[in-house]
Amino acid sequence: MTGPTDRTSVTTLRDLPRSIEPKRDLWPQIEAQLAAPAPAVAPAPATGAPRARSPAPLHWLAAAAMVASLAVGVWIGRSALPGAAPPSSASDTRSSGAVPVTWVSDPRYQRQHEALLQSLNTQLAALPPASRAKVLTSLATIHEAKRQLEDELGKDPGNALLQELLVNTYQDEMRVLTDVREASDAGRGI
Image 1 (cartoon, rainbow, N blue to C red):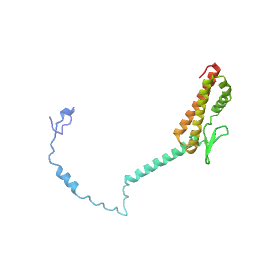
Image 2: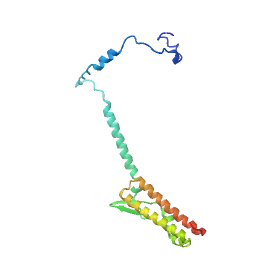
Image 3: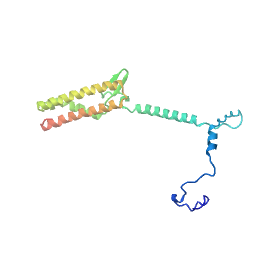
Image 4: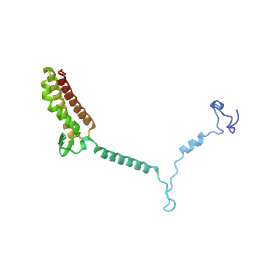
């Protein structure tokens, strides 16, 4: 193999030698530098060239910017949550203290829900007694769950899990009401 100055002859790692011995032992110098006391840093002169800025304040500045961005994002996001919307006259609202909370503000949902509730008694009358008992038990359970979730959301309007559970409960109620309508129209039980 050729010397270290001929770099063009090495085409693969196999062309390199397995080990290269240094010309002199470097460990005594390294050990002496580690054992030597650190040199004292001279204070910067009062006049003259400005000192180089240390990176530590930049880290703090970046952290402060991240916290500020997060705070602004949370502040903006809170206005988009269902618990932060202003109450409307057509929605189901409750208030815990002075904080009004709007649970359902979609007018389409309100209209459909009201229509299903208005026809519920006549549709229940068309069902067999066993099916009617199942429906009434299901609706009672759903209404109790809605009441409990709305009460808890009144205490903690920003709780995303409670909001999701409440939306799921509203959907369950709509499924039951729709199933009752379809079952009574077909003259079959549930």
